[in-house]
Image (cartoon, rainbow, N blue to C red; front, side, top):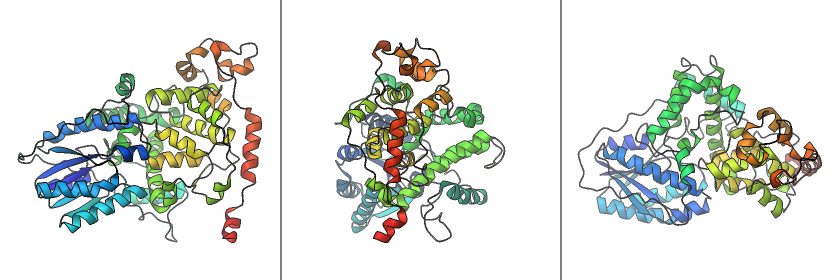
Length: 480
């Protein structure tokens, strides 16, 4: 008997570890419910619910090939070695197979499990699956991890041209085992179920992920570059939650994109090229997680920015979290997050810059809040995005480039359609006034919409001053 330990790879197709395990003989699947670990990692209730719903769909798909799915509980990952060792003894398991995950805690967990199993004579096998390239295999000429995305992308393109990662064959039906699947819990203590309206936005299962991918590749990808920045348009793939949970693989995404562009990465359809670029950003941030483990520890990638004098401003932070900053594009974006578990990517940058620059509040507050609400929350991408926006990260926006929420709003939601959808109290304003009700003179107080909590010009100057006063990286190195 062989075991596949499922984590963020909740799919039957193109699943490296599952196929490898099934080729060795009879296989069963195991999933660990780890509530305290999920709480410690700020996983959103809607994301945990999405995992459970996808497990139900996967259990049925596995049943079609006679692979039972077992559920075990381990409050934290520290208990995983004991729980898995016990199961392996019960089932007389010879080998356990996993797809690699990245981050300090994930690596330590897998090492501890491997040691415990190998002490019992059970072999532990891990596979590259959620990335195109093994972290540590895409390096600069001096042998270090890339810190600049454009250089990383260039090497990735060269590699992909010479060897495209193939899709993995799905496991064949095996003989029926004398082992019953376990019931999948519908909820986990500590994680309140999300609304039915949120669930309806994110149907579970590989079939839905594939439907979205195919529809995007067939109908939308060509417009992606032109439409992805406009939150009122359906310009994005809506696949991020499925990618984060491993319901669809990056290989499946890459193959679908290339198929729509005659196999080309860097020429042909500009929308396709732009979307493949986004897959490589996802890859880049996961490599950063491995190459620079401090970002897993809530540390700034740029050490000198640890000296930023962030404000302790609980009222401003609460106003941002509760979508009552008085800046419509910020509040509309935050309402989208709170109600759907997702936020448009352009707006993730806008609200992150507003929090870290205009309010001068520590990026870690925003990173944590996003993780607690995003259905597609992913440590690498979320951390990378927040550190980019706050000018503390790799390849990040220079500190003096500060998005103005008003100009972003006027540029990317010029008609105010997105704002009015999420802030219906502003529906009566015209398309000029809706971006800045306060400046509309006499209209202030529309349906109790709040005043702006900050002066954008003064707060911009405050942020510039805070960053200008930092020591340079060289000064810090000299001091050490």
